[in-house]
Image 1 (cartoon, one colour):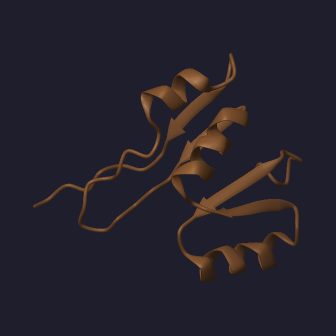
Image 2 (image 1 turned 135 degrees about the vertical axis):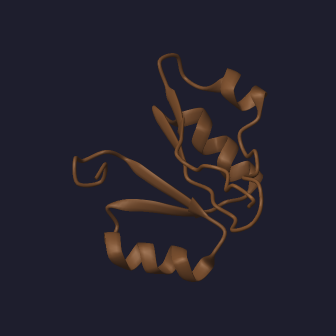
Image 3 (image 1 turned 135 degrees about the horizontal axis):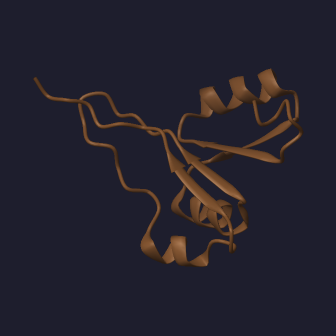
Length: 89
């Protein structure tokens, strides 16, 4: 949706096949990067909005954004985490 509205979007993922798929889908309208700690820190530092959507089936969601990264965000920037931990029944 953000790409369609003209936002400067960067998608981070650890799956190279998925990143290639996203490159093809967005045809250059969104940037893709491998999700290393340095790439995450760089993206958080320059972002107006960070949307976390990490899901590891059967496991707790990892914490990828540190308190130091939060302190480095631009004033007025927002962080939204849409991933939810899964209940273990």
